Image 1: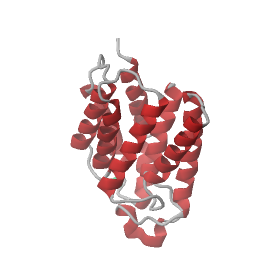
Image 2 (image 1 turned 180 degrees about the vertical axis):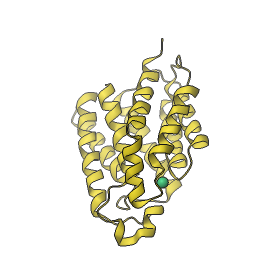
Image 3 (image 1 turned 90 degrees about the vertical axis):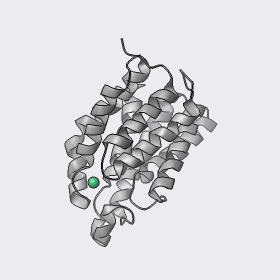
Image 4 (image 1 turned 45 degrees about the vertical axis):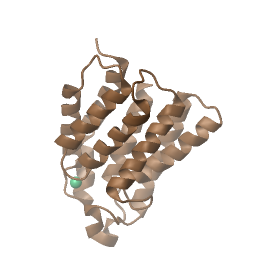
Length: 204
Ligand SMILES: [Mg+2]
């Protein structure tokens, strides 16, 4: 019997794997057509490598991060790998987390992505989904929303962030080589970040 923690990561992995072709098609338009393939392969490895009876959330996320770092090529492996490893920090030794800890985890994950990718919001990257989602999470916690409502609102703003990536030029990563021609296309990394949040929302 797998833990609820494993089931949540499995839900994320399955949704990424389901969207493999969609993510790869997005990356074909402005990148090198490997984002979906890479992420799906990475999460297949994660679901194999992660012990199904793991209860320590920090240990599990560290394992997820290390697996993505070592198994996923391109930029997405190091970026998502770093995000999960950093998210593991506030969850170290914990078997349950509340919204406040989850918010710290997302904050750390974003900081890790920013450090590793040297990117800020508005450069057509995963940050354009994650930073608005984080800001929404902070305000939901302030107004006392429950986890389900918080995740719903986070997905709404992350989705708006993905839409926003269509309107801007890429200045980071391979898509930046296209210059102005990157406008009009939605960012694959922002999209896989949204998919991750939606998987957590649906799981809850
Ligand atoms: Mg790519």
